[in-house]
Figure 1 (cartoon, rainbow, N blue to C red):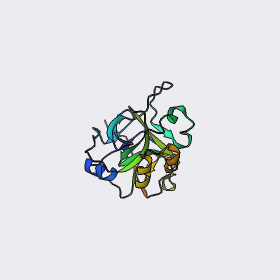
Figure 2: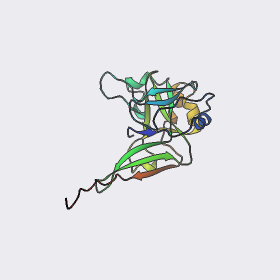
Figure 3: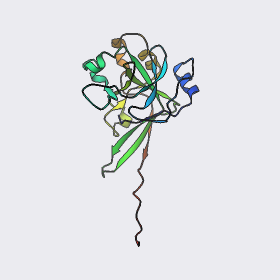
Figure 4: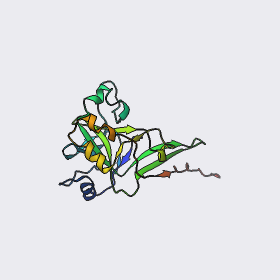
Length: 194
């Protein structure tokens, strides 16, 4: 998954989508990148802002993603499996190279949804987004995607059940995804007769 997602939803839509009783705190930007304060909802329904990316002692870069296939094998994530969260989003972004070598930015969203949930893990101070293999409709864009949870899977992921009971929710999204390609603007041409 690219290191960029979007949360462009009004707090009321987030409250309704995830059954929150109180207005959630909102990030100060719609486009979110690593280390930005982003909205997460933890087990128990607590909505708060945390920086995106776990701090690890073996890298200067924050750990922004965690592969679902190796969560139980990696010490960094194994201790967080009972500290699950969701990351509300309206889209995420992924770069794709065309056959001609041009890079296109793709905005990927859940068709018809005002907001959706990505699976996450938190250490209490920071969070990471769990990734999986891509859904067939977007596999041509990238070989990974965030785990996008259905309403039932969101409820299960935030439940107090042990990780083993909810691990099956970490799968490619089965609903409809849509994507838009954003072609970067051509470089400005200087004055030909200057």
